[in-house]
Image (tube, rainbow, N blue to C red; front, side, top):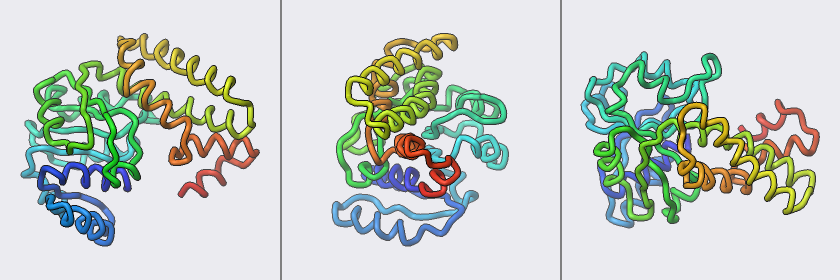
Length: 255
């Protein structure tokens, strides 16, 4: 999807990047490579899953609901180093991303990306800051060093906090869209987001998350972005619900 292509574009500023995709994305890659060539950066290519297995670093940008099947199907090496950028909770099990991944890969080889980031702005190389969560700070730094200059990476060891914040903020973002759709005003919106942030942490606290995570990029940063912009799918869902549109129709419009 667009998020995967945006990440490929970002990492290609300093690295050779190969994309594994079920779809033919030749047209999209041609556009990204034209931008990269104009700036003397690396070129992105598409390859098969088998061709990618000799890579040293993997960036995963697929739906959380497809993550378990992907790991089960993919014969990754045990020492593969992985940065997962998926956000959410597995519907069937209620598992967080790290809980899914640990069934297949050692936690020492896993990192998780979080923070306020719209794909459309990444492709424009606009500045942003993101957090890499991992119990392995050395690996997190390795991924951080691969990022382009327009992304400022921070490293945190609160993996579960980053995951809960990334998933839960979507609920509050929908509420933010409803608030704006009903024209309840800025006072109500500020109250919603501030109390919503507290609710996010209170939930995450049961899993051992740190308050600092929710005051930073993965919590407050991602929440404020997602709950205030038309670039946010969840915010637009809220706007649609405020207009009494059926959820099925809203999701169809979003594509």
